[in-house]
Every structure is written in structure tokens, then in C-alpha cells.
Image 1 (cartoon, rainbow, N blue to C red):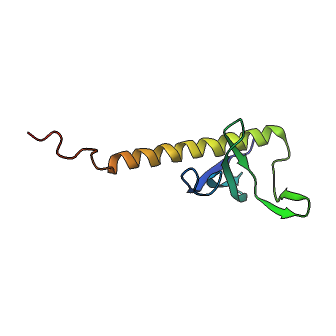
Image 2: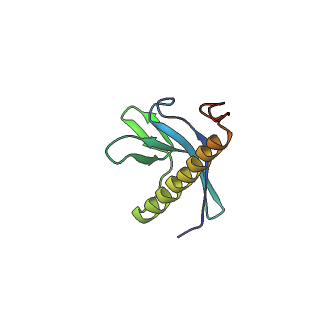
Image 3: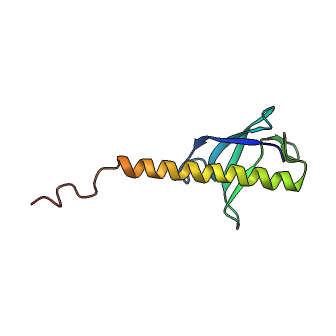
Length: 108
């Protein structure tokens, strides 16, 4: 399978952008870039990847998409994995910079 470089470009707390939790970009084999991949929360399976699309009279149509199921699964794993890492780093950063819950509680 081709080399994948996935980056999370923006993240949103639940409810801010509907079900959209983040946007990602993927570079495939160092020669093709896809921007605007959405990480969406919803449905029975939790998070899922949504490829860039445009609205038509018949609904939404993907602009670009993996042709094989094997590559779709690989891309999905890479995108959701990058989101998980970005989420963990954001949470760790928040914990490190958060003020104590009860300042002065341990004062003697």
C-alpha cells in the first residue's frame, strides 16, 4: 500500500460543528494530497471518516475517494489514528495548563 501522511488540520468540541469533530489532510505516496477529510461523530459506530464532497440535486457526491475497500480501510485507520493522537495531545496539554480545581485547599 502507498505511504500515507495524515495531519489533523482543525478540531472541534462536541456540538460546536454539528457532528464534525475534526478535519484532516492526507498525502498519498508523497504525490497526491486530499484536503477536507471530515471526522464525524454519529451513528451506531461512533466516529467515521467522510471524504470531501459536494452537494448535488441527488444529495452529496464524493469529490475524491478510495477505489478499493482495502485502501479505504487503510486510509480510515490512518485518519482516525491521527485524530486519536491529536485528541490525546490536546487533552494532555489542557491538563498541564489547567489551574488547580480548589486553589488554596492544601494551604496550612
